[in-house]
Length: 256
Image (cartoon, rainbow, N blue to C red; front, side, top):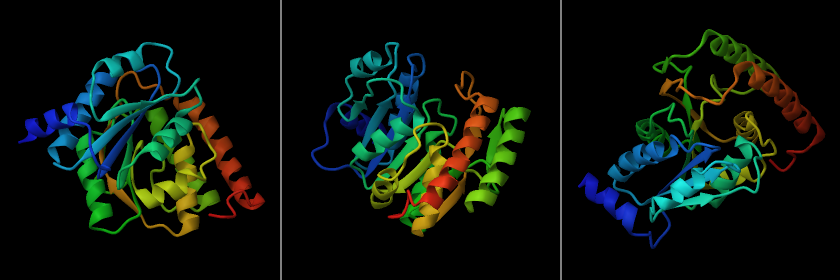
């Protein structure tokens, strides 16, 4: 029964490695982290597989961590940071600590509903991909409430990244990506970017390593209260595109 699965996940710590790990990076998310945890727990528990939830806190200065720990969930743990280091650093910390066979990272604002996990799992388990990425640009996707500024900036940056880094995906930045454990270990161990553009670096590395990447259309909604500032992040993205390109030329990724 679905509710029984949730109660077991809530109350009984796993005695073996989980099949699925869900990593959620967060920073000062006191108001929405518990609803996010509830939504994730309800759906993933319903899949009937052993799973864990990791909140990769990025040095929150509010009571986000206290609220999470007060929930007393047996298969949830917090991976803290001593200070705010960036989303990329938080995701890396959580993914390297995860024990599942399949590792998902998902944004704390639930812009991509957790139900879309099922599509990504199918692409990896049945389609043989090393990683499956949620995409707002693939045929069949649905992106709602996306501002004109954000849409134009995203399109321009995508074309630039494809040109300079030879990425083969349409949407590098959707915060909903699933990895096999071997792929996650190889990629996150080599990730150098701590900020917003870490996704782009991961996909660049995946291409270099010859990994199979499935781009999966998902539903996405630009949630109110998002911390993403399109123009500010566009500047950072541009900087990081050239940084990744330079890293490649300098041999920083020579073992990839």
